Each structure stands twice: as C-alpha cells, then as structure tokens.
Length: 255
Image (cartoon, rainbow, N blue to C red; front, side, top):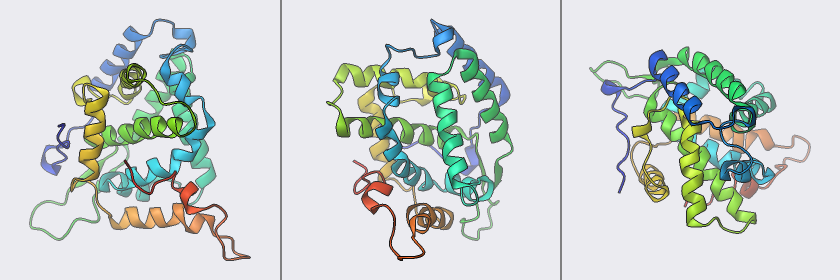
C-alpha cells in the first residue's frame, strides 16, 4: 500500500527553478518526435484525452482538488474562478491540451508560464486553528500538493473514458500511467514522487481519499458550493440548469 504523502508544513518541498528546468530536460530527452509533442498519436494519452467525455469529469476532479486545503486556499485567493468561470475553464483546458497535444516547444513554453505563475501563489493557510506554532503557508509549487492535483486529473480522465468506451486493458492502463509521468514532469515533479505502477497509483488515490490530508476547509466548501450549485442556479425558475449528477462528474463515490 502506498502511504499518503507527507504534507508536514515544517518540511514543505517545493519545485524550485533548478529542479523545474532539470525535469523539463528529462521531458526533452524522452520525446522522440518533437513536432508531434511529448506523446504522439499512437499514445494512450492521446486516445483518452481527445474524447469530449473528459469535460464531464471537470467537476469531479475539481472537488477532489478542493478537498486539499492548500489547493482550496490558493484557488480562493489567487484564482479568477468566481469572477470569470468560463474563462478559467477555457484557460485550464488550453493549458492541459497544449501540454498533451502541442509540439514539444509548445508544451515547454506552457510549462514555463505555469511555473512562473505558481511562484507567486503563496500565503498563509487561513483555516488553520490558532496555535503557538508558526502559521503554516501554502505554495502552488509544493510537490505533494501538485502531485495530488496531477493524480486527480489522470485518474479522473481514465474513469470518464471508461464510462462510454470499452475498458482499457491492464497494459493500456500501465502505458497511460507511465506516459502521464511526462505530464507531471512538465510541472517539475520528481520521478521518485510518482507511485511506480498503475495499481500503486490507484492505491495512492484511495489512501488520500480516506486520509486526514483531505478535508472540508472553509475555502473548499465555499468554492464547491459556488461551482456545483450557485453557478447553475436559474434565477427565473429557481431550478438548476444541469443535474447534480452531471455537474459533479458522476461523483457519488470517488471509487
């Protein structure tokens, strides 16, 4: 069983510039055909990510991300999600698709923009209870928090794909997962951060779901309420425009 990552506020690990650029060079070294990107048309990553059903998983992945207090607080303080939700949606998928389907140069350029933006996203964790200890701070470049965001995207994409397409074989799942490491490297994640197999990756997700790392923070609850309920309210009828089942990406149970 893969244990939950250590998110101790006193031992925060962040992706600094040196680590980030080093991981980008690993992506370059692994890319066989730069003009078609880091994966290519024969990859399982393209097979999965090209399907529109993945958009239905956006709510599920977002709820899982908001359960991490660092991610929720960073989004509450630094994201335009409440003031420009459609723009934020488009920008998020533009970033992901640029990395997955763009040329190598395009993927690297997008990665550097994201790393630069993340460097300025830091601050105190507001939901922390009063304590004589120093107030913990979050960072968007925190390795364990980014691993969790990465995991929600990769696991949700596979789950959405299998809702309408034949299940992936064990070999395809393993290939997809190891391909996805390149996506993680674009954020500077070290290789030893990733669980080593698809099954270990699933174990990591399940461990996180039941761990005290994830919680319903004030920031997470407010953003979740806005994204899953308030945003969809029809002022004229008082009804919501899309069933909760679809808004949350079939999120009755994460497993």
